[in-house]
Length: 165
Image (cartoon, rainbow, N blue to C red):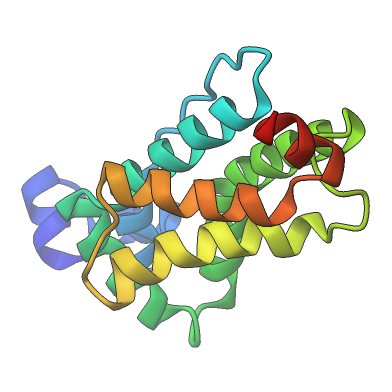
């Protein structure tokens, strides 16, 4: 924080008034701008592909990978930071995925017995684990394969019948 304050020609106290620790500052610098919400068309499955591809691209930039590694380490000692990441960074994307899944469920495309949060976790968990823990981010073809496999497993019988005819 000292080096940042010196570079910005402000006091450390000024930095700490705005950001309680270095991890919060890093979060703001790397993820401060909200993720743009996509302009969804009528096709739920196409929209789900676009959203997961956008999320994967966001978390595979070198800055994001370096920042998230450090942020994850800070979660244990700074629960307020963990909450901020969940609310500001992950919350809007989770809400968008869940809304798409719900729309697909309501239209009869997806099974009615789905746990929508669990399906969202399957998608997010794979993207985050590959990008941030295994250091094997999904490329575009990998994201497509992931979403296609999840979609095949959640389609309603009616949608599966239409797909094969």
